[in-house]
Length: 127
Image 1 (spheres, rainbow, N blue to C red):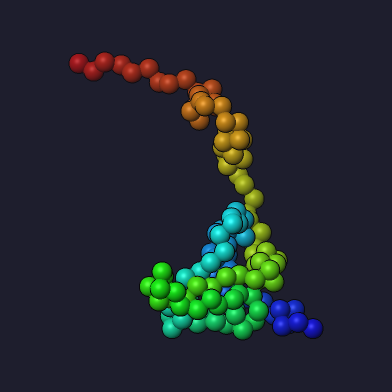
Image 2: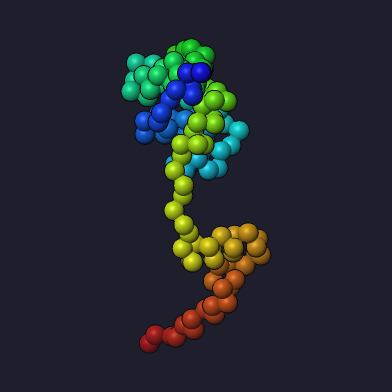
């Protein structure tokens, strides 16, 4: 049995650091090619990263001059998998949110108002 399989549940702070390191939102979505977390090992975040290193979920490349002497941590493949499995499901989108996403995907070049078919209000001259 590996150490990562013995982890029952990540703490909220540990999960947040893994998500942030990978450029994901609080639901584990939107992960980019980013995979680093820079912090001072003596800070709260640094101590959490060191816990994750001891669990095999991150690696520590140590202090870097380029980062002002702070340590650079990277998420391991086990850390990625655990982050994905323990991130909560996002709430369902409202009708309005789904419609706005549909507008964004259409890439029509129209404003949202135009895309919805809402005509601009006529302005009246004030005297």
